[in-house]
Length: 182
Image (tube, rainbow, N blue to C red; front, side):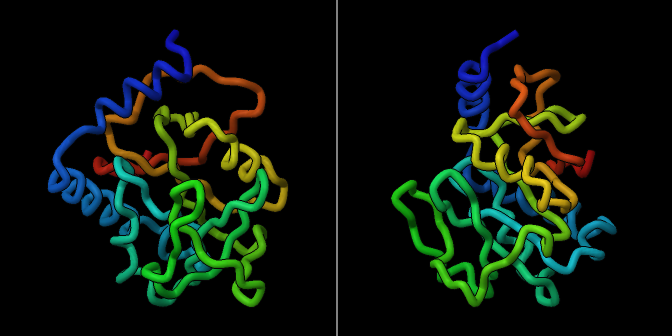
């Protein structure tokens, strides 16, 4: 079996497709999600600001007008979530992530989140996940207060048969690609 480092390298190479292809795939992915009952039932949704090579889930914005959307912000080894009404106001952090500014008035408790969209380098169809290596989402998803439905978000080329795993690795309930939800 490939190591985590090998899988990350192989997937990053597979993600080198033209921006217009990524945009089209992102559109299909977002369309599949908004058609799913999990999206329509969710009141508070945790999302992420996509990096290069990740699906552009910010295309969900027109479908989220009645939802409380929150983004993560790194605090030490943890992720805190803050309500964001305008993703243009996210700022680039020292980790080169787009994050909300700290604002206690817009903090969102983990137990308020109904649905969380989880980034990853690779997923299996059954929900195993390989992240970037910092363990932030593993710690978040392992937190007992995080009771939300967990949907891993990736392109179809990021789906693998198996992933090397460790006891601290946390998976997701479902996986969303441009081909739909699994």
